[in-house]
Image 1 (tube, rainbow, N blue to C red):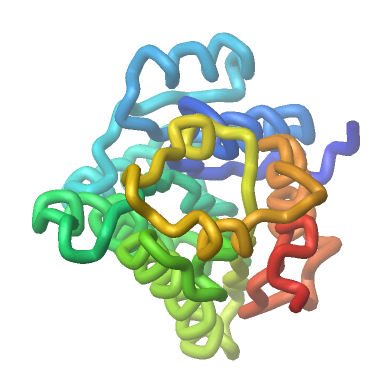
Image 2: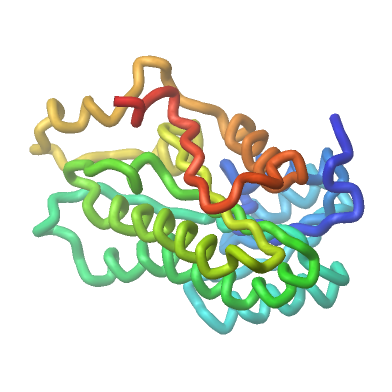
Length: 248
């Protein structure tokens, strides 16, 4: 394994499982020190045990704005600087539009959009000092319409536009902003996938690829490339890793 991130620091959300855990461990393998956030303290502890002393954990509810700001401040205080922000945490639910509750709507936007915005807002002053990088996890769902997933697709579309707009705003500043748009990935989010009993499965089939699911480690490898100096010319891009799902 290379040492592309030797001496660098990262803050990663959703680090207790899935893509967040895989990214945390890959960054550590490549030399980084990671400030790892997750709402699930037990899973976060498991990640720390796997990553060793280069993983510093903080149980955090990223839907709380004050928690986002405090987490960034603590990361800089404990690690000395911040080179990479990885907005990875995400949740999903599927339902008929007319059955979506306000609580479910607000919760999904809180995790998938609000947290990304307020963590970026708190982190950017520190990232500018380090010629840093923000890597957001979007989704193929942010690039295409999907039946029975209206709220989720809305949130991921917002991540796409957050990425592009931040890239434009900081075009002349020492900060890169990129996003990854995964397709189906073998994580708890996908394993817990369910649909209402009476949906039209003909409409859902077009959102799956015959090439199957990615592994979290596949997305983590792409994350680390985009966060590295090897990707110095990639700014504002939404990079699909979806087994061809959005190709046509």
